[in-house]
Image (cartoon, rainbow, N blue to C red):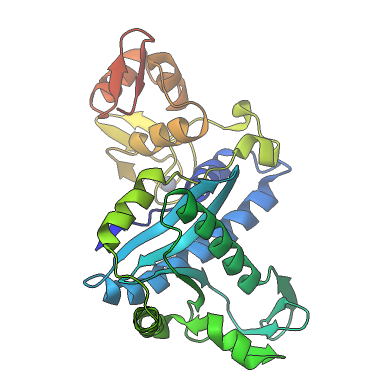
Length: 316
Ligand SMILES: [Zn+2]
C-alpha cells in the first residue's frame, strides 16, 4: 500500500504562486522561473516513476517524498519501498537527450544534441541517501534492515551511456519500467541470503511518523520582501493580475472571462507566501481593494477557521 502520497513540493508551489505576483523588473525573477522549471521537470519525472512503482503497491509498503532528519542533517528520498526483507531507495532522474556517466571522474553530463551540461553525480547522491537512512534506521532500532538504492531514469527516450565501468552503473541505474522487477529480485536475494522478514507496514508507520516536509525560505533565497508580492486576483485564462469583483464572481479586464471562485487561489497565495493567517482587512486589500463586507463574506465561505483572539482566519 501507499502510506504517503506525493504532492507538489512546497518550494515549487511557492515559486509558482510568487512568480506571477512579482514586478517583471524584480531582479531575482529569471532565476526563480528557471528554478521552478527545473523543479517541475523533476516532479514530472517522479510522477512518471510512480506510475511503474504502482505495480508494487499490492506487495510492499511505499512512501513517496520522504523527508527525514538524522544527526542534525535533513535528507530527502523520492520513493522509499519497504519490501519483505529490505528497504529500497528510488531516486528519479528526468533528463532529455543523452546522459553519460563517467565512473572514473564520478561525473554526469547530459547532451541535448547542441549543449552539454554537467550535473551532480546521481550515484553519489543515492549513496548519501542510503548512508543517512542507515543511520536513521539505526537510531530507531531498525539498523539490521538491508538497504539498496536505485537511480530511475524517468523518460524512456533518455539514452544512457557509460564511460568506464558499465557493470558499476548497471548496479544502480535503471530505466523506470525495469525498476519494479529489479526491486523484487533484490528483495528476494536479501531473503535468500538470510535477511529477516519484517512487517513492511509497521516499519512504514515508524518512518511516516517522523516525516517532515521540505521547504525553502523564498524571501532569503531570492532576496524577496513581502511587499514585493503584488495583490490581486489572477485570471485563470490569460494570467493577467487584477480581476474585477462583479456580482457573484470575478471578471478579467483583459480577456473578459468570468470566474466565480478565483479569489480562493489568491487567498491560498497569500497564506503560502505572506503569512499563515489573513485578516479581513488584508483580504480586502489582497483581493484588489474590495469592500471589507465582501471580504468578510468571502472569508466566511472560504473554509478557513476564524480565530477570535487574533481576529484572523487560518487553516485548521
Ligand atoms: Zn483574462
